Length: 228
Image 1 (cartoon, rainbow, N blue to C red):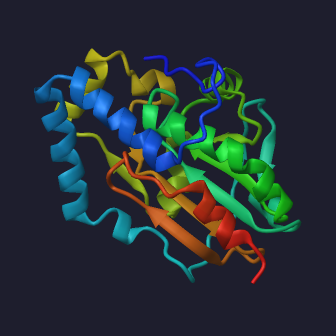
Image 2: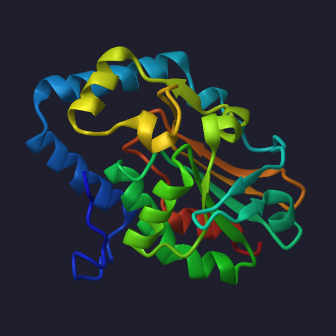
């Protein structure tokens, strides 16, 4: 499914991320069948039972360094970025997810404020470099979209889970082929998460959600980066 960008919608969207996500949730509730919705709700409930988000790296933990390719094929090093300032890391599911699209578009609007605070921003997903290129181009994203093969970096942050068979069936029915999008047949995804790393890799802010429809506000990230 192709989710239109704010630019394609031909209007400046000044709503909060929470308001945009609520609208997309309402649209899905209206147009997606109840059986499909029940599958997603059950998976979210199971992830909460497993406490996937609770097991993710928390404030005070130290994140290990990583090197991943961005949407142009260039290798981006977290160590190099942190040598210049703090780093915001957003883990997202892929360009096929309307909630991820909304999140990255809102982060794109907040990007100048993040840069002004002396920080960098990267977004990480398991999708291929080509898929990241398509996403960055379509939604005019100005920060690096990093491809994380086999979710190796997301796994180090404690975010990875495997999709059950019925959810795989739902995605295939809606033409979301994760094996193609991610370049492997694991059918694994990260739970959406956002971290702010201090220059030594210490986590200053952490938000991980089993419910992919919930994300922190970009304004909250900017406040974390503001000088005390």
